[in-house]
Length: 426
Image 1 (cartoon, rainbow, N blue to C red):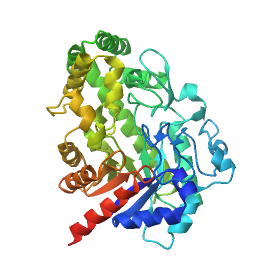
Image 2: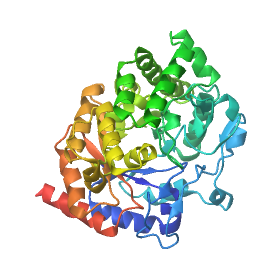
Image 3: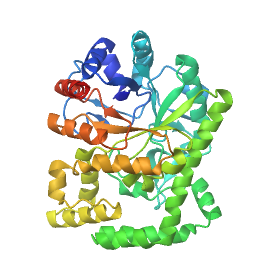
């Protein structure tokens, strides 16, 4: 019951016949997760060329909407920029729906909720960092128009295509990456809605900002361990982390409640960060899995768990010695107990044990009977390392795997998965 992610350009450029041929080679794909709206992400990331796309060498995601729905008419206060391909008549979801109707593939549309090129009343719905600056392309889970917009859009998608399960992604506050590395986005959100909710929950906003400024000063002076100590020991930082988790969980709960008032059959699956990082970004596995019984996270060991760790380290440190200190502080902060140097990390990522460790943490944190997909990196990776990740996931508490992603993967890797699956069937 494994799955794989598709981007709109995969379907439009390559066609479903080629896609299904390569997926059938793998021998283990049941679910296909086609992306409805993109994020600001280079395809493939961070460099290289699309290996089996005859139309584009690479595609730059621009945070746009890729389905022919009048999003502005559906919710005029807040809406996403519609991709130019839709204006030309493209409908990747409809193409996939029609082509898959006589196959065993099950389609689960994949939505990015809080990150993209949104338009309308951003001043009342955007994320504000601790310096008072707008965090570009991010919506706040406490924004008053965010739940109404997404509830109407998801209902409209179901009416158009008939699907009732959706994988919801970017359900969190900003991390440090994106169009460019911006760690300031981590210290958010300080919009009026968040500040009011924080004050109601007993957080003195001015004291929180002062503490964050202290941490920022330590990071600027490259005293990384002192910054970590403040973050670990500060009571107000602890309250703020809990506030972020409450904000994201409340957002998902409210969204599902609004949707199910109209269509009780719609279910939301979760795309989360690995648990070692997720807690900081507002994702509480324990509470979120009370709302959804299915999730995917991405313990991509070769990439540091899907996080741009190198970008983060090199934002703050420009010499080998300082980068090593920053990396060790990073490991300490996130309680990543791996005895590796920064040079080793840049070469190999985390040890393969990261895959099993994160999957086992997910199981421990989640509600009983939660279905767990372990994300599997399927690009910029050698065949033996792909097999290692599959083995580690199989020997963990995860139920299945979800590959990221079809369009970025070299053709030989589809055959690698297929051969591996055949050995498991013997």
